[in-house]
Length: 119
Length: 106
Image (tube, rainbow over all chains, first blue to last red; front, side, top):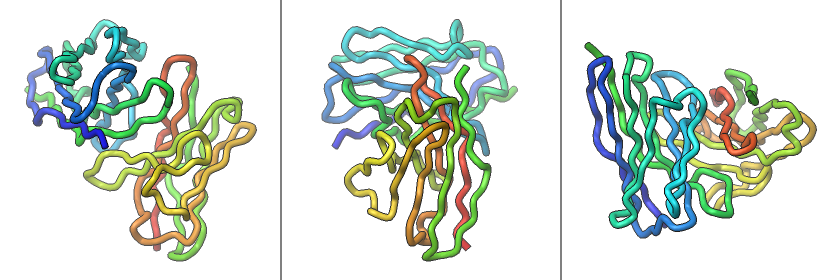
């Protein structure tokens, strides 16, 4: 069973950037898609985009285009999500989640990374 | 953009059947997925491709999808089922989540 382990909580000032990592155990990126989903306090799930583990192609939600960058390092089975020009509205728990090449569902999910944006 | 609508809350008595709906334009033409999220935890897949249960998910969880509505049904609801539930679908190459439904077992 693949497990996803994310980096620790972050506190950032408005205008800064944050980079969250997600390491997969017993997993090869080939053929998989790593998605990022965020959840503001007390709110629902919001999809941010995905990166293809094989070729590194990306697809970002329109809301985040120009502000989010998803990358991966296949040598260490780790995906990254960087969000720039942070505002207080970006305060949220950020999750990574795997989708298989022939599946369409999110399983498993990482444990989440709390990003707090505060001056 | 594509939208999925869920009721904010549903209440059920222990042992009874809970139904949580998810509405979207021609949702029945797509696959619906359901996730359970308990406080402080990551979401967990409970139904995929409308009505399939992942291994480890109790048989009391079932799903259906037709027309504009997908439904998650929990038969013989237990206290441990109290959680937020989210539906999810794909619209072209983008992912859409419903707003979530808080299931209260009382």
